[in-house]
Image (cartoon, rainbow, N blue to C red; front, side, top):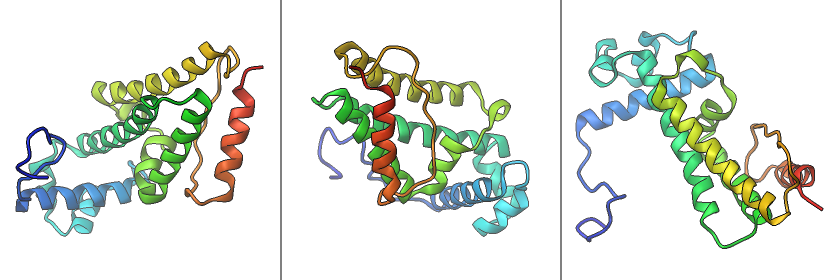
Length: 188
């Protein structure tokens, strides 16, 4: 809680009007980028959806592209955290990969636009070096879990192809996909 030592993850300061405005801009841009696409979304649309003047965007972000990168990095950090928290558990690779899949699916169910932005939409040249680094961090964390499985023989050697789909955590296909993915990579 606030005031307790060693709780750095919890931000206890009251939200300012600027914080609230930034939050509305982020939510508006996220919804528009994932529904309409980055290139089809204009800054006047973002401002209108957020209920602010267009110039307000530039008080919080250098450009529309900077806003996209901020959103992308936040999504990548969320996905990496899911993998890292699972990787830290004292379970085998099968359980860890199952938990990663469920954790990502649950997060996608709560915030589908965040998952869509990170896993489905391709932004390539629009991403800055920091965004590329956060994407690498996710990939490396996931590869670490897979490497653990290869080391203990529960994942067969060689490359494993991964793909993303848009499912809710309760979707009947989630466990089927997790089981099928596991069957595709499991070792002897």
